[in-house]
Image 1 (tube, rainbow, N blue to C red):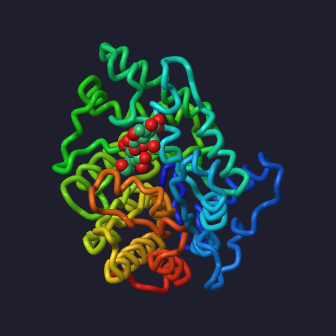
Image 2: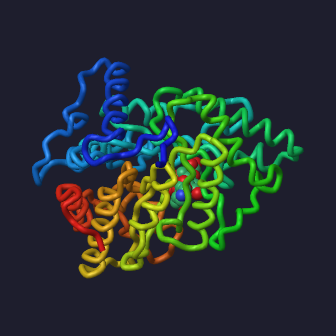
Image 3: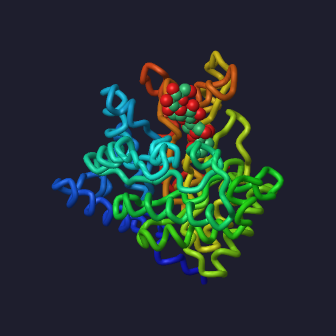
Length: 371
Ligand code: G3I
């Protein structure tokens, strides 16, 4: 028998622990916002034209998007689609260390608070992203010269400050982001080099102390299928569970190339959930060569549908989050020259075949077999 840690809900079809967690979160949100419980939190209407969030709720999972505070404030179409279609949000950059503490000791919580407030207004869960990473660190930290003991103290303070600030408002935290290389070795970053691999367990324990109810994740890319990197994550999670470290979930980022998805995503999800942790698809996008052809968008739709079906069918896969929902706000073209069109909507906010594939996969629930 695998018993999930108390902070980690395991999903059981439509009436599992996630359902109760979502309801609890929605009740808490409703209490904070002074609003009544939203229909979506009860499962909503699951008709074929229902928004994604209603269909996902019916399946006992959430469907989320990464969002940016600036775009929410300036673009009413963006904020309207976000509120209508999604019941979870991950701040794309606003909770990263360089955003919240650009100057040592001087915090700027405003953009992240804005997203949390948007989520509360629209009865959405919040995934906190992220507490420990080797990127988007403030320059005061990266340009300083600190001893290992000082770095440990700074990291503990950062985690405690941030998790405490948002205590009770965050459903799940990406505590450690992208700790592994492709070959399964640890990334030799600031944290690993100074503190050794134990920084991961310490970070999880510090986060748990600051908000015992948040579900704590390790999050990485290219761990969606079974390979050297996901094997390393699997071994780490197994070890952390054996040591009683408060690990609640594994985030499969899922930055895909159309037509190149691993074929064993479902099996990989299942091996993690058998360890007693949740899994979530945390940063889903699926890029194509530009300009996108109809054939590429058809392949992309099949990919999105397949990933969502995998999650729906795996007990313990609690939700799927898109990394921004429209092509106009994706990180992809800025990083992969000549590639893009990776999202559910185009840059004019027209729903793409991928959107309809996700809707169909959610509407089908556990009836469809994947792969
Ligand atoms: O905010 C500054 C702005 O002041 C400045 O004028 C501008 C000039 O370049 O840069 C802005 O910062 C950018 C920031 O996004 C906010 O827009 C950074 O340059 C840019 O590098 C940063 O990119 C983000 C990236 O993480 C950083 O590594 C992407 O938006 C974000 O989508 C991406 O997200 C990551 C996840 O956190 C972890 N997994 C992979 C994923 C994709 O790379």
